[in-house]
Image: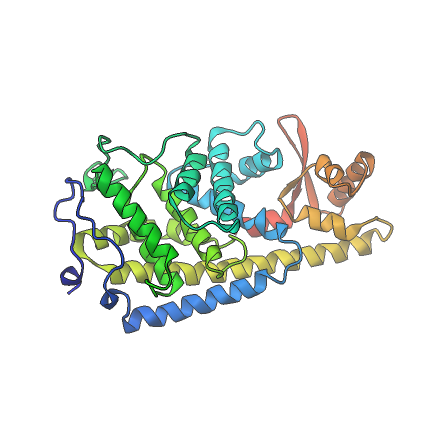
Length: 376
């Protein structure tokens, strides 16, 4: 029985200072069913990796897929913004954006900050987690002190709303010890020889169980998921749309976490995360194909409609690096002069490639096909 293999949290409203350190016992993750689903997840992730590396302009992925990942991950924490607001804020590089859009953009910046931190030869350490957390929350706070009476409560409006469902470790020494144990687990692939996708799922649970910060643990943990996959070479850039699956199965996500702490049910948690990787790898793969196909189709259309238009390839590439384009995006990258950029963007509106929008008194050009694909 799972509860014999893994000590559980006996009382939900008492701090779980006896949270078991990693690794978990092999019997909990080396089952026929888990290994079968793991094979499917690895195949799907490998297909996504193979597709993404052959795309010359990584900006097609960096500024589109990761922006949607940031939006969806923030929605899990009930931070909502519209696509229009988000794309405008991104186009303006954070200027004049509302609170929700700013929070989503901070998530995206944190995702890339963590990616670059690890790219520079560093391993996962406390500094990594603190940096990601601080950028998300725009704070100088660090690991929570022991006097913080943090509890996890049931959300929603149902009969159990507001009830304590989990209390993470509260002793400062325990928090530090378990966090260092987690860091050793994810870095040491010799001592802890577990498939990387399984290790990510195990580590994600452990991070959420430790809950090392006063707030922002969910978003920090989801950023860790993608940064871990890139750090281990399973993805070149952090483009997996993983939060989409978590949002679509939000109740299963939280019940999976609680299932481990309350019943030692690692099986259902690991299966959930493996299916999330498989499902979102396939979704992201299809979305990338749709974006590339739309770009090629529009480039062909532009050349046919106006053969005299200069640098159509550069123009099309620029239009697909973000949904909302401004004249200055084309001038700052030295593709066109200001007058030529404006003339060509307006021509593309007549071709029905773009739609001109006036937002807060400024002119933007919406890539209708990219907008449609990202919204699906």
